[in-house]
Length: 226
Image (cartoon, rainbow, N blue to C red; front, top):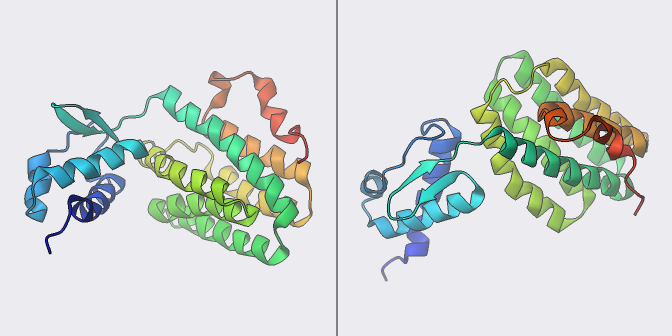
């Protein structure tokens, strides 16, 4: 029985995703359909299906009937991602405080240690992956499946930001240390402290001072209790 375009597009999607996230395809670089189709020995239709999926993920810009190219995020796009992350991570903090346990918080600390190890050994790939894993683990601890789904989808974009701008974190030591401070606040059931740290953590990362008033810096500690 011949494979459907859907079956064929899955491996193409995985291949292109790896090529983009490994930096083989650079932001703004065109991705030739014919070349990708030749790699798999298939028609261009499943390649287009895979590209549409990557476009939905925010990793490819499609120019209909012209070409496809790797996305190139503007400063405003990156800051929009940052604003969304503050909202989602703040909700994750509040739910994790309600439903998480000390064992889960210690697992979160283990991920923070892996991220720190990546920084100390100049392993940017490890640091980048562990950084995203930390925030995804926080969403899992929240126990809210929809929140985790949103975060998982968003983190393709977050990883892409880190790949596109590897030096976006000016003070890496301080940034990594905040992971441990978040865990300590969760373990101590210090919700206000955890919200303040996560807001500061992301506010500086995305340079949101250019997007919102400075007073937003403290909003993370002011969200109403559920």
